[in-house]
Length: 398
Image (tube, rainbow, N blue to C red; front, side, top):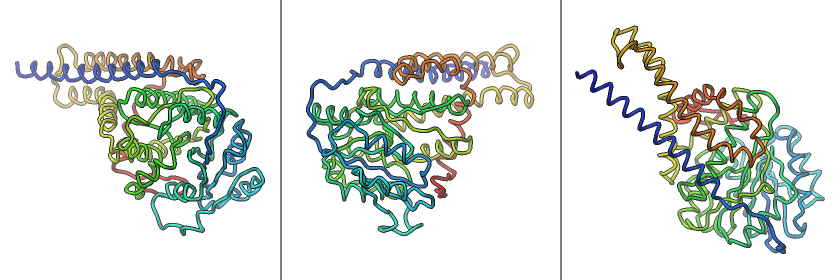
């Protein structure tokens, strides 16, 4: 009788956990489809913009990035481009210098700080650039990104219409046909969809530093990166949380295909795990504890999916007892498949409108096949993000 009660309790916990996850994903779906799309309508630009790019060893990407920013439709006299070279050991700085006649200013980080003295070089790079900027609106992107020609004009129009303190905008992975690239594209699209939905519905706050805008005034009001400057990453979300705390009604998501910034995928499994471990490493640093609760639920769901089949086999082989009636491996595996189907269907429903927005819908047939890798990387990256270390830009970070 006691075993039966334990079986029932465990089953209820599992079903409640996965039902809660499915409801959360469907709530994100509702949030995404209700974000109003933004279109510029006969609006004259007047905001002065400072585009800031931190670059380290990006000789393969920086020219594409700068070409896309220099060729913006926004009036040239209303924006400046500040690129901070972070101790590059390749030709990044030389390439940036070749653009100095195109409204591009090169700042060398080594003129301000020596190598191996701080933990967060990117935050310091952005901070130094902001100190030298003349724009009222700061827009950041990464050196491996490129944007459409109406990127700045659309952000400026949105800023002038709604007067936000912080704008999160969409980012997409420009992928080829390799599995790892397509996996990243769909996985990242889902993260971006959650970003838009969560900001719009004020569930919690998320963003990506490859496409951010915030007022210089708001940055200064919250003390910039003070208090988060010892954390290697988090120049985006940790800053967002500081501004959200001061201006909760002035943090917005800009839903427009004109402002989608494209970024390149990582090339190897090792690079992929380093990136995701880096992202996971700041999970317990968020001031917005709502997102920590969400991440905890997501992690728990993936741990359970990874552990259930192994737990069934172990219990049967070691103790020869059943957690559920009939044959333990068969019934728990059935339960595992059922829970996996719940997770996959909920995520597919959410991804349908999101993938359409990002032009990735043709890849959706791959999504169910990617579930095992998604579960595995979530569990490993989440654990190592808390207890391990990672490499970022050829630097070892705790």
